[in-house]
Image (cartoon, rainbow, N blue to C red; front, side, top):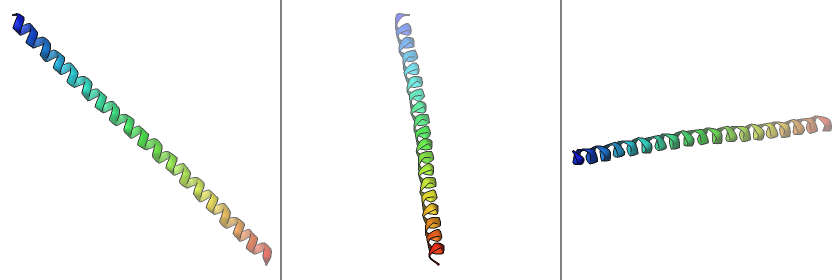
Length: 69
């Protein structure tokens, strides 16, 4: 009976360890996905700012050309 208890305890510990590892991997994956989402959002904001700056530059050039005529 003592051997059975020992084997059962080892089995339960193994299962618990596997479950903990799986949760850790899932959490890491979720964190990575969230980080990528934040990076994409940041990149989108940068592109938006660049486009706004470019549009302002074009507007200034257009205003400058029409003022000269």
